[in-house]
Image (cartoon, rainbow, N blue to C red):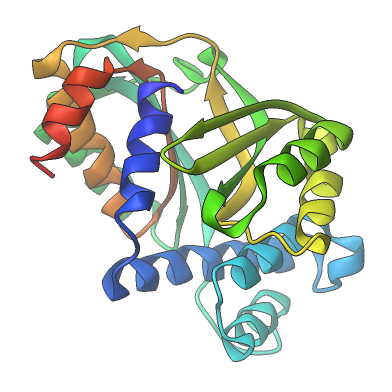
Length: 251
């Protein structure tokens, strides 16, 4: 696994506190609202909405929350309008960072994201300055305690998975964007719970970090992921296991 993937795995293994779960719900609700607004409220004809709603189910979001988000997206209920905005920049050590946000105030979000980059020793770049370093892939994350490993590998490989990584009982399954939805559906129909599922930006190569840069980069990534408007953060770093395990104690 890349350093970013392994760090995400470590955080998942620590579990979701109530405050973290509330943030997850907020992010999923925004995805549902935007998907319904842009593609309509019919799940059968709107693949982005299907993915967002399934993600809500995967995270045990109450049906009432899902229904309200759908109605806000279609205009049946009043609500905030969210727009997609992205930011590209560099973290310490030359690590490329791509940030995707859903915001009701782009100026505010831009200022807050810029502040976080600056605070942790990074800087924002121009549009397209780092996006070429990433490739869109379907990614499904599964807690191995909820799945039989042999069954999981069989389903994944027979339904378009390109790669399967495992670390500390957490599985990350990668697929092409085209194969993602059908693969996700088959996994869910097999009764296997997914922690996360969606289209992610995967780096084509990684920058190996020493301890000092690793600590700075992880602080920036954590701060960005805690920002309310940020939906996802992709970065191309790799941290040796001995360094990652050591600095994990500081978070």
